[in-house]
Length: 92
Image 1: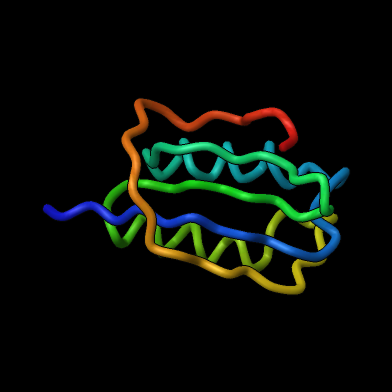
Image 2: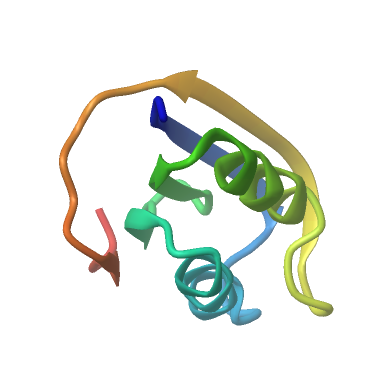
């Protein structure tokens, strides 16, 4: 089965509300690989790789986020990369 890899840029009230930790939980639950990190501009960035339906499910979730988040926009871009697990990275 083909695999999908996307880079996500998530904007809104997405820092300081548990967004990264919740995204890691969702990604691991869906058996996805990649990473997520805060960006200095206040956004959250993620790379997500796995089966297309699981990646789509995480993309849909990312538009809502955890209860304390207010997501204004999620941009997704086709990407490439190989990942062994799903990790939370330091702010970039």
